[in-house]
Amino acid sequence: MLLKITFTQQRRVRLAQGLWLMSWLAVMSGAFIFCLGVYLKTELLRRAEVMDNTEIHVVPNILMMVGLVSIGTNWVATRVCQDSLDASRFPRWKLLLMAWFAVAMLLCCLLLAVVVLSYALQGRLEESLKVGLRNGIRFYKDTDVPGRCFQKETIDRLQMEFRCCGNNNFKDWFEVQWVSNRYLDFTSKDVKDRIRSNVDGRFLLDGVPFSCCNPASPRPCLQYHLTDNRAHYSYDYQAEELNLYSRGCRQALTDYYMEMMNSTGPGVLSVILIQMSVLVSLRYLQTAVEGATALEDPEGESVGYLLEKGVKETFEDVKANVLDILKFAQVDPSAAEGSPGAEDAEKPADNTTEKAASPTPSPAS
Image (cartoon, rainbow, N blue to C red; front, side):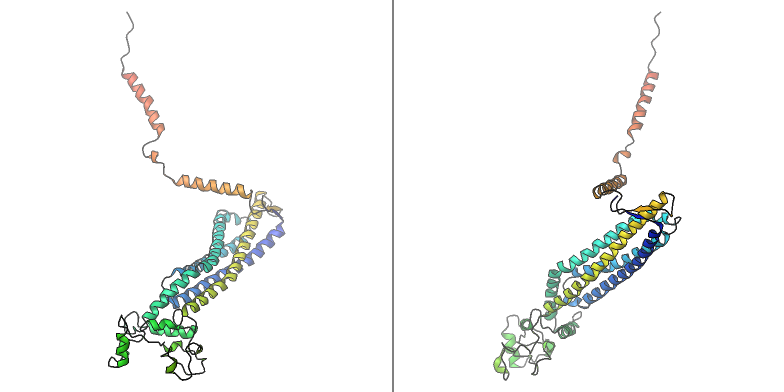
């Protein structure tokens, strides 16, 4: 037996009581994980318009699923703790507990996967934001196009909330026409010249939307002719950093989401420790109570353990059981053709018939 401990009746009762409290703590931890997943999912959906794919949603989806299953699993653990004090009611949990241990181990593995994915998906998150923000900036002017009419509001609110500008920086606005044609005076010489100077016939200018303006700037916001030092008094294009937000929105959103997901790491690891403690304690309680029942002395001493055999032997037993289950589930193709025993049984019958049909030689006279 691996890591065996001797339990008296009093120690079994204390273990059951402590495990009952720990199981309810695990239930609350499951609720915390679920709420964490819902919060992260909500934040991702709020910025869905500036994301190109939803791969990052796997993290909150796993958190929500694990949270709900953890609530149900640990509630079952509380019931097991109560019934462990009654020798007549505990045996009904014997088969269910094996499935419970498997589910609890799977929950711990999934929570570890969430921690790993939080770091591993950073590159995918950046790429998704890069493409999504590029499309959002390109459709900024389409306020009268169905499906894009709220894109301008989304981008403006995003830039003001996260104090950012453009995809990588404010120069991204120089490469797109972000002013709708309905607000351009095509009789103006400046407008005509700008459209003619562009191969695609777009109205490009070295300006940005108002949401890029930094309120901390000591001077009124400059939105247009940003690269022309002569267009503004006492202005230096290279040194005027406070006029606009210098950080791009892709970096701002990536930092925001990664900080959010990374901050969940310690909480998730704490839940894993609680879940593992419940799993180990319940295993000791199960084996100790079953040992006392087997000795037909519910109030006597019994031995609790984690594994009845060594790790290698236990793995081999589990492997053999799984293979037996798989073999049992397979259909024997020869069964449809008839069993060999039936064919062998028919052969003697045929021989008997042949012998009966053959004439018996008469004795010599």
